[in-house]
Length: 481
Image (cartoon, rainbow, N blue to C red):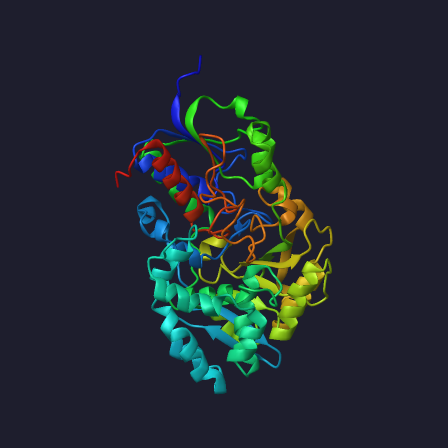
């Protein structure tokens, strides 16, 4: 005799997508339990004293343009639950040799004016797209909508977005500044810039910079997950930490179980219940490069050669388009370059709560091959020193996590892949398997809601939201709010 469900839904994992799924279900009136293996909730949105007492470091994600762009996040009362966004004067800075730098400003004109002869080209490219961000995110931050809600905008964007980032940058910009700015944005794809659709990442990153910017959470990224958790609890949801789920047999009866895990985690927990064909698809799921990340406690702000770099919390440290393209290409070839492309976050100049008075924090990583055991700390610091002479002298303490070490922190980061899977043209809308509804497994009542589903990595909650909507449809429920 089948046991009667004791709870409507169980969510395994408390990353932003797991919490988003739980919130969406709780808003519809379902009883929801979240089970988290770690001692703290949050997945990629955690904050900890990694170096010295009083220095708060974002363990993984630090800057959150998708937090503002996400239709799901915009609908939540997270400010009422303690989340406050901090907006630096500039979204991103990109230094170049010779003391030059270009910054991504809220104003398209202010950004384009730094690009010399490429100023008009930048305005022509970005101005028509920037005003369409809200419409595009409705269609692009989820499973492939057929038909799209805004077909003209999607087709217009898609014709540009499908291109490789490197050739796109060369086609649209002639100067070093414009090409470098775009290359830094496109490199967030964690793919060689010669690959198709890497231009889409560059365009979206620029568009978000002109629509709300690239903010950080006051007090640390943990505030995002904590605000989501507090809101979930206000809806009646429950969260249990320190509970690693290793088998479906451990779970109490529920109408639906959602996994905020990578496909490998789903296989470990539910593999014997899944059909062989679906198991094979999950086993073939491709994971991408890892990151080697260093957190710094600093005796003062980073001494950028160009002071404009101090106006942004995010700094792309990698030099020219050619240098960035070479770095990302090498990673996919299993190589480690001496001059890697480095993404750096300097939070404390804009959020003094991150460090003791007069002190500062910084966060920097570069891409490395999946499972890499190579310590890139020296190369990362050399790149920063290249554009900020005297940086090393300000280091009080550092904490390094190698590519091979990320999976022990978060099992979803297989081999150190913080994006939970390659997001190329073949695995963009078909993650984690080729199914009309990617969130639904072939087993009734089992779902996957992690960033290994569309729309992929980033702190936006949309994977969890869409998975929960699938559950509600299957259960015949409707949202109450």
